[in-house]
Image (cartoon, rainbow, N blue to C red; front, side, top):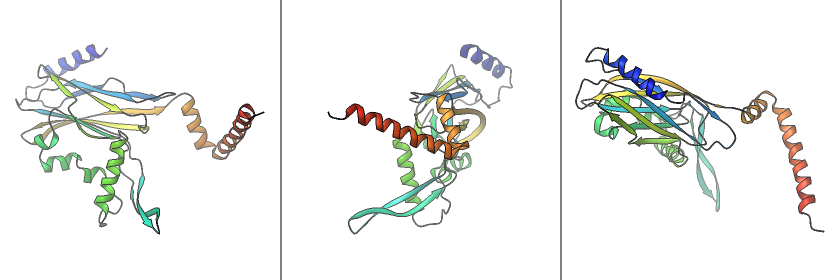
Length: 245
């Protein structure tokens, strides 16, 4: 199926004007379902491009939906670590991954990265960017996402064959958020973006996980009561099984 799709993409691209630079892209798995024992998924983006330039480069970006998060700073008071100052990020993506043929700073100018929204200051903008500690809170948020595999600023995962067909594989961890993901492919030449193509990807819970999540949202009190009841039952059974004679 993927080979047939690539063949069709190549035919469409070859029938376009010679200078057409807009890539034609697709996703191998447009729907990712989170079920039991979900350990992550690979996002395969592929397609065809006719750059019209010998030094053309590609940038593939996968960005998840915004997940509001509050970053708190730990402060030591009287020998005890407590929560101190905090900063709120309402528009920070819950997942961000970038793949390119070369490091972005080598192929794209500073203004180009700013226009494409590929700067950390643009992706992770606090509600109050004018605070003195905004940069420190942003750095802390990025470090946390990076450790959890939810922030991948650069990987050499883009491969181009015969100067036309390309593919990029990016990894989504088990903690990937649900929702609509934005996939963009940029063609870059002479330090500037020459074209942009966009595709979508959906990540959602399915099966028992979806039932539990929907129940918790629709019937929170009933869900909480059932959870407490099951905890008491399991606790009682465990106590009787493992109790000493």
